[in-house]
Structures are given as structure tokens and as C-alpha cells.
Image 1 (cartoon, protein in one colour):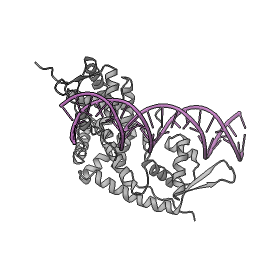
Image 2 (cartoon, chains in turn brown, blue, purple, orange; image 1 turned 90 degrees about the vertical axis):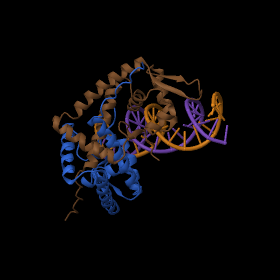
Image 3 (spheres, helix red, strand yellow; image 1 turned 45 degrees about the vertical axis):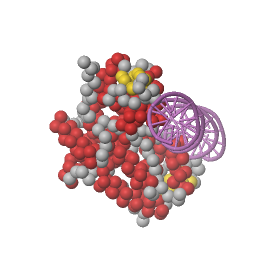
Image 4 (cartoon, chains in turn blue, cyan, purple, red; image 1 turned 180 degrees about the vertical axis):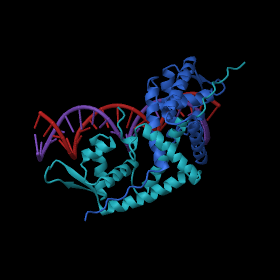
Length: 158
Length: 158
DNA sequence: TATTGTTATACTCTATAACTATA
DNA sequence: TATAGTTATAGAGTATAACAATA
């Protein structure tokens, strides 16, 4: 009489989402590494592209990240010439953060990489399947209050 | 004439999966923190439950993690009395890792937490929708060669 | 006195390499 | 000499708190 091993619970949607999400994030990181970017940097670029001229505080609030973390991200992108900090002469405490022309080129390269990533990840699904999946995922994301286009990885854990 | 801001690309399935995956992982971490466990610890417990008596090397291979990382995980679970290291008298280099009775209790609590987590995450979907989602996600996971029940977070990044 | 941005610091997680004990 | 497990060490990423400049 050997003790019966516990029956493992069936793999649910929550686990599949976590598993596939980690896989997707990893593959995306590999792709953007070819552009010398990290995923957090791409997310910041995306926000700057959508809302050019915002202050670092505003960007931090949009991403849900501590302002101190943003400094390092902005530093890295600025040193590579992808973004510009412009002083606001009316209030010299603020910077207005803008994409440079090189930054806009990088955004185009990122869009290509993103499309290739999307294709690769969902290549097992038909066009119709992809639409169904998108609708289901969108409904879950909305119900949980996730900000469209903003990855929770910025959000502090406390 | 102001320069037109770049049109952000539509949010695709890949981003939604990454976003929801990170959210699911975070919520799960919060839940199992109430059992004083981290997600990596729960994944290891799950593998030990399914394959009791394996060596640490075998467990590391199954999870795809460096053996050195496993030591700390096993240490933590053993100190809390959830698992046992048993020496193999035939080859005294090996340990056989087993769940303790307390470990089996913890597995039952984990199953409850997992079910609650699953319900919460997919509460926006009908039963039928959940089945459709599960089928689609399973197909993607299989096509990308993801091991059922093993989170890619163990896998080294190299 | 409040706010923007910054620096300093510490903590968590993980990987790599060197070590031991057994075989 | 090869293998199982361990320890030591270092690196990446992020958070918290203190600080300087400006309002």
C-alpha cells in the first residue's frame, strides 16, 4: 500500500495567463534587445510618444511608478539620443520630455518588432480565433481596471 | 501647424497576454503570501507533490532552473516543515525530496487559493467563455513548447 | 512651505563560479 | 574523474528616504 500522490489540480486559465504572459514578455525582451532596449524603456517611449511634453512626474503617474525610477529610465534614453529634456522657462523645476527624431525612428522599428512578435505569439490561431481571444482578454483586462497600454510591471508592489 | 503625434499601434494579443499575465502573477503572489509562500515556492511544491522522492537535480531539471537556485527554495520549505530531505543510503550524494504531512495540508490550502484566484481572474467571463479561452490559450502554450504546469520564471534568461 | 527632480542606499532575486563529499 | 549538493559572490532591478533647486 503506497500513499497515493495528491492529484494535481487541472491547469486553469489563471495559470495559463501567467505562463503565457511570462513567455510573451521574455520573447519581447529578446526582440527589443536587438534595438538595445529593455521592455520598461519601450513602455516609457510609448507613453512619451502618446503624450509629448509631459513632466517626469506626470509620466511617472501615468505609468504608476515611483518618480525616482523614472529618472534612470529617462537618463538612459536621453544619453542614447532617443528623447530630449527641455526646460520649462515658466517653471524651471519642470522638464518637458519629448521624442527626438532618432526616437521617432526607434518607435517605427519598435512597431515592426511588435507586429512580428504578435504574429509569432499567435501563429497557432486563425484570424477569427485571434479576434475572439482579443475580445475575451480585453474584457478581463477592463474588468480588472488595467490601464490600456500600460504594463503592471511599473506598478509598485507595496 | 503642430507636428502630429505618432499614432500608437493598437493593443494586440501579445501585449494583453503580458499585461494580464503580470496582473495574474501579482494577484496570485498576494494570495499565497497569506500562506507565507512565494510563487516560486508554490511551483516547487507542486512539482514535488507530483513526483515525490526526486533528487534536487531532477527537480531543477524539471523546472528548468539552475540547481543552485533550488537549494535556497528547498531550504526554505524544509525549515518550515513542508518538505523533507531523505538521504539515499545507496548513494549518499543524493537527497530524495518528499512532502511532509504539513506540506500536504499546505497543498490543499493552495488548491483552494488557486481556485479562488481562478474565479476572481475570470469573473468577467461566462462558463462557456472560460472554456473557449482555455482552449485558445492551451493551443498557444502547446505551440510554443511550454511545459504544462511549469512557469517560465524558473527558466534561466541566458 | 510645497513641489520637481535627483542622489544615496538598501533590499530582493537570480546567476556564475568555486568548493565538499561522495561515488 | 564525474556527480550531487552547497557556499560565496556579483549583478540586475527596484524601492525608500534624504537632498537640492525652484516655486
